[in-house]
Image 1 (spheres, one colour):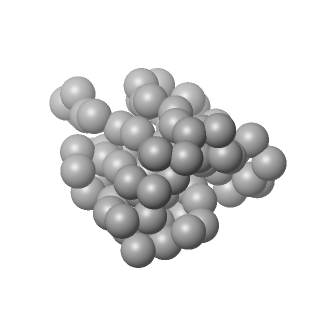
Image 2 (tube, helix red, strand yellow; image 1 turned 45 degrees about the vertical axis):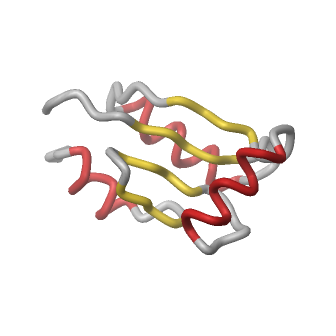
Image 3 (cartoon, helix red, strand yellow; image 1 turned 180 degrees about the horizontal axis):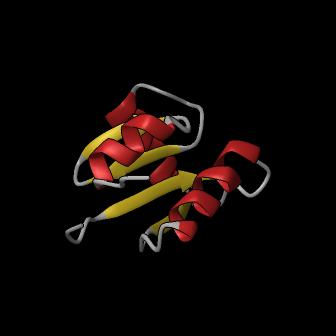
Length: 81
């Protein structure tokens, strides 16, 4: 597995955001967490990028994953298990 640049746009109250972060931690994937409930500029940025107002939005090497799509996340991060 190579190094990947991962950002997760989330909110503290989002259950799927927490599941996504737990998944990344379980697989020892470093990520930057952006709380869009506190950062309105980031919220606007992710909405423009994804066309979504929902979270999580996970940016893996500039590929967006909307929601917790485990299969796609594994593929993009080259996780085999």
